[in-house]
Structures are given as structure tokens and as C-alpha cells.
Image (cartoon, rainbow over all chains, first blue to last red; front, top):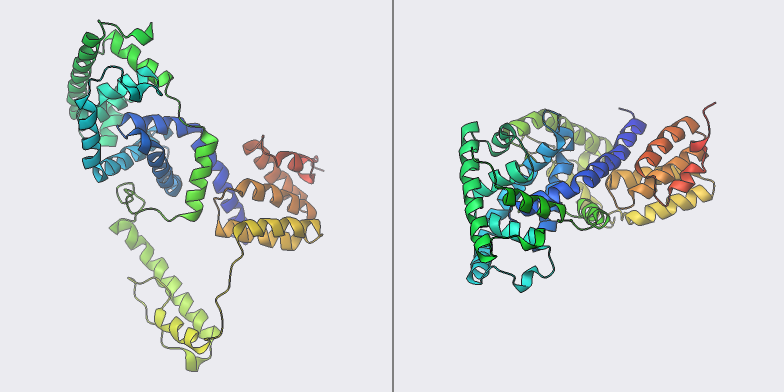
Length: 186
Length: 206
């Protein structure tokens, strides 16, 4: 490769990566958040995801959609990150659950639907939450989920069934505290 | 398999419709700074994510490491007198330049300070000054130096626009048109777009 050609290639990296970032940043940000990363950590984790994406941009072969590829990376970054501060997150959850999850002060700055969804998702275990988010929130197919989680298809279906049940149970408990309605939806 | 209840679906849809991330421009600037200035942190799942080379991918680099090591040894033997050079012995596990060959050379020139690279921003300032002063070749050399040191950089947009203007000044109109077109497609709203539009890159092909 000539020096000019090599230079051209170097210059071409930035626009391609920047375009990818601008298009998919909201998707990655929401995915990371739904997977249970605390508010204060989300931006940092999203940056971690795109650092990995930047290094692996040439590896994308188009065998899956860009979103699925990005989510696969986000999924592994989140899992690793979660392990690294699992103890701290557990402590935070215990503090939150010690208070009645009705309309506390921490929701003032956030939309109620988002806060409620995050509270309900927090009641699912890790595998259920991930499966539920991929299927019900991000609308991924079961084979895509199986590939990302590296599990059998039947495992996805069984996790999804249990996750839906757990989510509905949590929703019913929420509704019982709010006279059967989601007041902010009306 | 049981589906979600209507209220559950409404809740998810409402949450996703109202969950706006911070402005992308702000986060992009932060990411560019990090890619440019920071090494990847230890807590990243680099191996899981495929960033850290696996054993198999490491094996693929062994021949390249051997070639690099051999070339390094040849260059060192060529640049320094033989009596200052120790034998350069490398293995596939050590793709770095042979320390044994480098150390004596440094010892032989104790008064020579390591070269100080100018700040990245300074390269672009000097490139623009060189272009204004009518020295497009020097401007291009400075831009290439900037690109090699920081392919992804907060000022990459400025660098690309400058490159188009420098190509025009060098008389490379065809290449300027190609790069100008790519630049305007990716950075239509950039503060540099007008400069590119006014350059030879916007002229019609002969």
C-alpha cells in the first residue's frame, strides 16, 4: 500500500466510526441502562462499549445486524462491569428496597415510566432481566438472543417465560399500590 | 408462551419513548478524547469482547513479530558503528525491538535528549500557517504527522478539511474533489464545510 493510500485509509476511519456512533449511540445507551447499570455509571459504560467497538470495527462481517453486533459487545461489557462492582450495586439496591418504592425523591428528576420500568426490571434475576430486555424491550429474536448469551434456544424460551411471569408479578404489586392504574399513562 | 399484559407493554413503550440519552455531540467529544489520550482501562472485558488477542490470534502475529524484529536489528546495525552494537537476539515471544541493541546506543550518546514531539493541536496550527504561507508540501507533511499520531481525534474534522485545501494548493484537484465530496457528505454542518465548498474541491471535473 502506498503512503498516500495508507493515509487515505487512516483518514477514512474517523467518519465511518463517527457515523456509526451517532446512529447507534441512543440504542446502546438505552440498552446499557435497561441491563441494570446504575444511572451514574451508564455514560461511562457506554464509552467502554464504543472503545471496544472502535477496536473491533474491522471485525464486523455483516452476518448479523449492526444492532445485534453492538448489543453483543454491550452485553459483555455490562456483564464484566456488573461483576466488578456487584457488591456495591447490591448495597444500593438494599437501600432502595428498604424504602417504599412509591414516589420517592429520586424520581423527581426522571420520567416516571422510566423509573417504574427500571424498578420492575430490578426485581428479575440477572439472566431473566437480560433475556427480557432483549426480547421485550429491544425486540430481538430468540435465535439472536441465544447467540448473544451463548445458550440453547430452549434455554432462551424458558428464561423468557419465567422473566415474563416475574415481570408481571412485579407489575401487579406496583398496580396494587396504585389502585390498579398507571396514572402517568393516562 | 404467555405474552405480556397490555399494561406491561404500555409501560415499556412509554419508558422507551421517554428515555432520552445525553446529547450525542457531548458524549462523542468525550469518547474522542478518551480514544486519543487514554489507554484502555484494565476493567474492560477486553478478552471477552475480543479486543485482547486470544492464543490463536497471538499465533497469527508471530511471523509478523519475527519480521519486525529482524528489520529492527538490520536498521540498528546499519545506523550505528559495529563496535557499539551488541548482537540482537529476539524470539517469537518478544516482538519488541531488542533491548540489548538499543541500550548500548543510548549509553554511547548520553548528551542527546529524546526528541520532543509538538502538541497535536500545534501541528494543525502550523499546517494552516504553512498553507497560508504558500508551502503546501510542508502543510501536508504536518497533517500526515497529525493523522499518524492520532487517527481519531477531536480535531480530525479540521484536519480533513485542511487536507482538502492543501491538496488544492498542491494542484491535486482530482484527489481534492474526491476527499472534499467525502468530507461534505460526513460533515455537512461543520464550520469547515464552507471552506471546502469554496475550494477547488467544489469545482467541476474537466
